[in-house]
Length: 273
Image 1 (tube, rainbow, N blue to C red):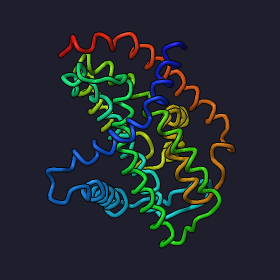
Image 2 (image 1 turned 90 degrees about the vertical axis):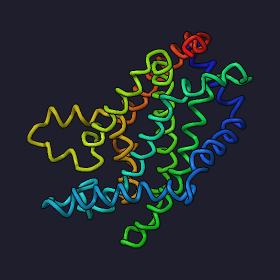
Image 3 (image 1 turned 135 degrees about the vertical axis):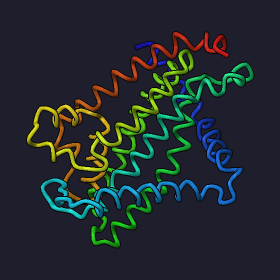
Image 4 (image 1 turned 45 degrees about the horizontal axis):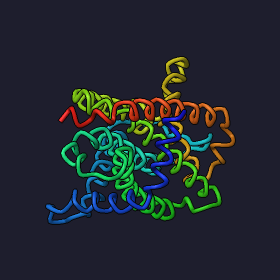
């Protein structure tokens, strides 16, 4: 618990630095591209188009449902896909955020726990733009904004807490064992197809035990929350309060573990240079 409090205090105290470094991170990643930061929008657009074509056009698909209401596949897909992009990029870049900056550690005068945070924050700006585009598309296809959109603020905060907790763990382990990053990359590619992003897990209703196990994935909670908010179905985090408690229980455990191992090993990070 002491380690968790220390990490939280560090994020609050250096939040101004997190914002500055995150903007620098975002700009530096696109400096060598002719289209610059436009690639942050072009790349996800290409990906979602390919997945929509494969999963909707090339094979017959039963109508998908959100909260018992039948909805078109394309808006159902983009309602969650850009959140997955946020998760994937935050986790992958967060996991290597410390060891890729080991040479800078001796020159730093701020806590190392800030590094995964500002890397995630740099992805957060892109996510907000993609979410804005998603909302515009929803208005065009007939799903107009409603009061249910307010819960997006909650789910964005919940997503950020989960991603930071995961990155604390993976960035620490990846610094000590570089293979962790490669394993994580492969695992997340597989998770894309098992988390309910591209197809509804309710198709496994004949295998109820398997479906229930897959729905325990905290990412699924966030995906469903986004969809219920954008389709204006209900207040997902309230109507599924048991799932909400489970989600925050998982986030709390992950954060406590991440903070503990981060504080324990960070003074030795420079030894892995």
